[in-house]
Length: 442
Image (cartoon, rainbow, N blue to C red; front, side, top):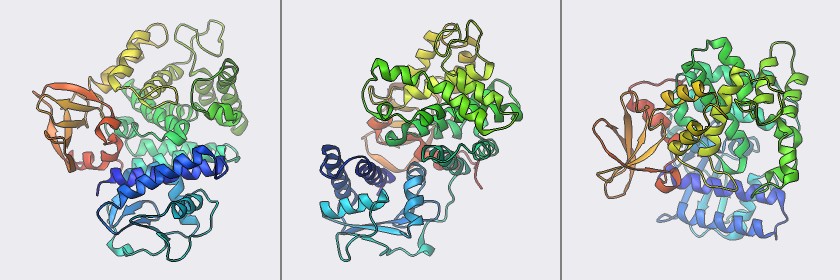
């Protein structure tokens, strides 16, 4: 069974739990979320009497198989389950709606246990820990999870701990994030329920890679990474429910959104001593255009070079990620937007450097070749054009993707992850192994 199926179930479980936190059990949103969870459970158990998900110390497992992508995407839920003493979730075929609702409550921290002998069972793990796959998570994935935790801590009412943010940036640098390649694949990771946090981490990864391409040294990259990781911390400080609703924002809500750069900069300055002013400046200026427009008004002063780097990374990830009022767009569409805005919204030299770094088909791009097979790019097209076949010519999803060199291949179509059913970040470790190296492993 592919990780895609397990991720679908975990995503539905997480979403149902979040709905239960926000609404009463009879609310339409809760009913819809539980229905989606029930469907995901049916897919998960299709063709077998039961399925066991093990909740490990740093990862989820499906049977004995490590789920590297799901382990980071749902890191917070896995951590919370483990802290409450849950080491496995067994779902029986035909799991009842009531048992799945109780499971969603447990996942959200509102339930203590499930009835004995039900169709969903906790801590009845049929897979021994010794049987679990021992392949380690990429160091980049571990740092990604640590970055999310640092941002969640602020959201949950705790203070902004810049030492944790700095530790996450250092972890990315030590894991090779500034050297592009794997980090650009990981920066395609998104989670609709925590879009702001994932967006901030992706912007940090993209900014570090872009900063290295622009010739910055490690000390400069650390300051750049701090500001990039905290660009939306002002939204957390504002914490207005209207900003989390789907759909387009009202004029009043937009006025609130335009305050988040100032609020974020103030939060950083209040949480730190000398030396982090540049992080606050990046947060303050990341929505200021190259030509001086945007917000806040700098009265004709051009934003800092680091702020201009982050603005390019911010736009790219915002365009390629799903938003409540519009679907995700391809990397090529995102780079076209940057090119159209070069010289006005964005620094043209930085846009040029970004496009050079990403290539025509950036790492993580999903392409249908003329022969019909679907491949995922793992190295920028300007280099050796490595890729992996993820669907064969008949459209079948490969359990183990196959490396391929794109030299001489003709691209028929650029696809989105939802169309292919394969999130690029899920193949990070596979791509590293295929390349014959393991950057970022520990």
